[in-house]
Image (tube, rainbow, N blue to C red; front, side):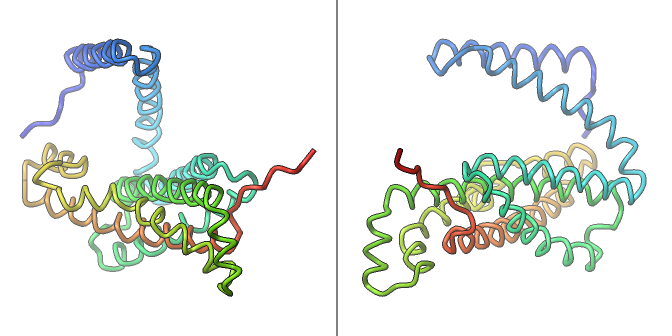
Length: 250
């Protein structure tokens, strides 16, 4: 199995697929046809820049840690913005940190992932990206639900439940829903989907066994990290740390 060759053929194929997607986007009345090409161009620019940086950074552990710190900062800002919770969204740093703290020690201390930049950066990038998405979805959907079902929360309070438990009563479903995408991917891996880690290792080594082992490790790591992150989000929202300010009467 050989790796994908970077060259004119790759550029042409990607261009054709981007144009086709843009055309369908437009014909299907999904919005402006420029959305897809713009996203593709942004991806090319970002990946080119990141590739150039990583080519140098992952050769040393200290520079790899610096890259991971930047990645964590960007993930925190992105998740915070998606929650729509204003200043209180800064609390999302805790669930993201909780997810990584749960995953990294067993991976590194067991020796499954060597303490080198070329090994740690890709694994952390995958886990952090998945946890960021789950945390952002959990925070946004629970806040939306609390706004729509405020009457139920107040009814639970009137029955003697604590503020934390009253909120949990109406938002548990939203927390579990945030974990569904990765759970579904884990349940159907190999049958419906072949995720990126599997494909990447398969293309680079040609070993399906090695690719499968790496993918299982990544999926289980994602489940642990996302579960920790979403659980912490639930507590923060239920206790009013992450919240949306109610509009004041004029």
